[in-house]
Every structure is written in structure tokens, then in C-alpha cells.
Length: 247
Ligand SMILES: O=C(O)[C@@H](CO)OP(=O)(O)O
Image (cartoon, rainbow, N blue to C red):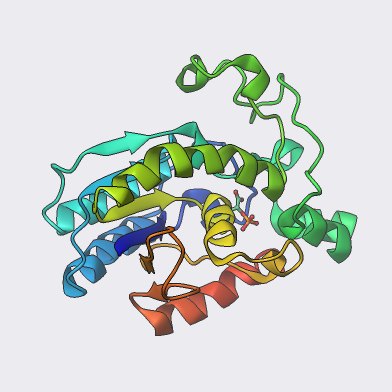
């Protein structure tokens, strides 16, 4: 049996403003910093002691990991970062206001872009102020792998190699693994873990800053399907708030 803990970064500055974020590297809001620390406290209180951390290349996830680990007195843990755990690339919607987008394109198109499994938003132009073309953190990424938009299916496809090649080996060694990532990269991982079908995944939302614990069997499948939030009441309210963004 192995323990896997998933943690979505704390509230970001663009979560507060209601903007599509994706790969834009915004930082945490003051409330998000607090959520991250509380996430660390929840780990401590539950007696969960991660041995290794995997996170994305985006500041909001990296800072969340650091703030949570500091509270748990675990800043010394090994941390691995990969673009494969980044948020879904939101294409030309990056930097756009969610409520305005919904008003302009209608609820159906808005939800297709936000939550359908295989409809990506239009691609972002390299000249767009919110494009990541030329961002030095992706300099070693082969150009053909650099996304200009992604649907959730694309995220599953680029995240799974990291799951199998980097995270599963840690779990197989008996390590407790903490993955600090993003709303949609964690939806992709939960879809895989829980075997959620392509239509039902539209309804799954992940709250910021609340650790979600899975106990996995020898095939790295959940013994507790759906996982257990370390603060279930707070998670319920926060999940509702994520679902209603842009309304
Ligand atoms: O803007 C984003 O990158 C994501 C996460 O904040 O938003 P959504 O929940 O709408 O997919």
C-alpha cells in the first residue's frame, strides 16, 4: 500500500480576479498563502509525512509546496518539478475574464472550453502578451511539445508519462508522495486514478489548498476511490465555488 497526497495550489491573484490563467505565471494571493500554510497544517494534523514532492514549473504551485512544507517542518524534502504537472494551457483564453467570456460566447461554449474533455480553446498567438513562447523555463522543452492550447485530454496525455515514469517509482519504493499542482492537471490525474469517464469528468472540480489523500493498492489504484479530503467540509464548499466561477 502507498500513500499519495494531491494538493492544488492556494488561491492565486488571477483566481481572485476571475481570469483564465493556464500557463501564465501568476503568484498566490495573501489568502492563497494562508491556504497553503493551512494545507501544511492539515498534513501535520492528519499525521501524513510526505517523503518526496512533485510539482509544476509554475510559481503558484512551487510557493504552495514551500509554504505547506515549512509549516510541516519538511522544507528539506526532495522536490521534483516538471512542465508535465503544469496547469492546462488555456490557449487564447489566457488573461481573459471568465464572466465576460461567458457573457460574450454563451454558457454552452464557455463550459465546453472550461470543462469538456476534448474541446480546446483557440490557440494563443506567440505574439500575445500572455503567450509562453520564449519563456526560459521551457527552453529545454522540444518545440513540438510546447502547447499553444490544451483540452483536458491533452493534459492527460502529457501528464501520464510523468505519473508512470517519475511518480509511480517513488510510490513503488514505499514513499509517501505529495503532488502539488493545479486544478486541471490534478483533474487529469484523478480521472486516471478513479477511472472517471470522459463525460463525467466535466463535473469534477478540485478546491485550492486542501490536501486530498489516496491510499493505493499494488497496482497504484485507489483503495479509497475518490480519495479523502483532509478537511471534507471546507472541500465541499470550495468545490462548489470553483464550479460556479464565471457566474
Ligand atoms: O484559469 C485556470 O487556469 C483554471 C484554474 O484556475 O480555471 P478553470 O477552473 O476555469 O479551468
